[in-house]
Length: 294
Image (cartoon, rainbow, N blue to C red; front, side, top):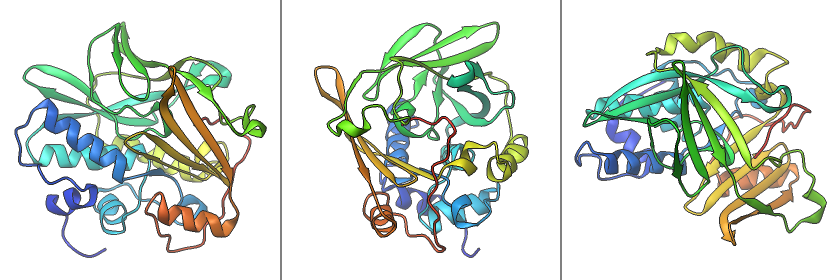
C-alpha cells in the first residue's frame, strides 16, 4: 500500500469540491450523497478470493486508491474519518440487522453506522446499506417521526434505549414478467431494517464481524456476490448474475424495477460501465439460497 491518507484524495474519489463549506446539515448531506453515488456497496473481494482487512489504511487503499467499494464497516468508517477530519462531530455506533425470515434482529452487532451532531441536533448517517434500504439524507434522531426521502419514508423509533429504523416502501412495477416472483423482491410495504443504540463504538468492536462475514458459510456475504450503487434517480444492484435497476417513484407512487440476467463477460463489462469497478482477480459470481432483497 503506497501513498499517504489525505482528505483531498477522498473528496476527489467522491467528486465533491465544496468540502471547505460550513459544517452544516447541507454540507453533511452533500458529502453523504456524493459518497453513496460514487462508492458502491459490494463484497466482491470475497468472491475473488481476496481478504478484506479492517483498518483505515486498508480501507483507504481499497476504496480511494483502487476505486473499489466495500461494506458498511469500510464505507461508514471512511465517511466517519472524512467527516471528523474536516471538523464534524461524529460518533461511531453499532447496529443489529433485521432478519425477515426469522422475524428478529441479529444476535451479533454486525452493522456500523454513525451519529453526527450539528448545533445540538443529532443525525443518523449511514452510507453502508445496499439497495433500496439505503437512506439518501441524514435522519434526524427523533422517535416516531416519518422522514420522507426519495427511496421511501424512513422512521426512527426509540424504546428503552434501543432505536429502530424502519421504512415504508412504494409498490413495485416489474415489466419483466418472469421476475415478478423473484426472491430478490421485498414482499412487504413496511420493512424493518436494523436496530442500534447510542453507545459509542470503535472499529475494533467490529473485527470479529469482519472476519465472520468473509469466512462463515452461514454469512450472506459468502452466499452471494453483490454490488449496489445509488444514482440520482434510483439504484443499480448486481446479485450473482442478476442485474437490476430500481427507479424511484416512476409513476403513481410506484417504483420501476427492471431485471436482466448477465453472462460472465457482461458482468465484467457492467461492473466497469455502471459501478466503475475494475477487478484485479477473477470474480466467481454467486447467488446462493440465503434471504437477500434489493
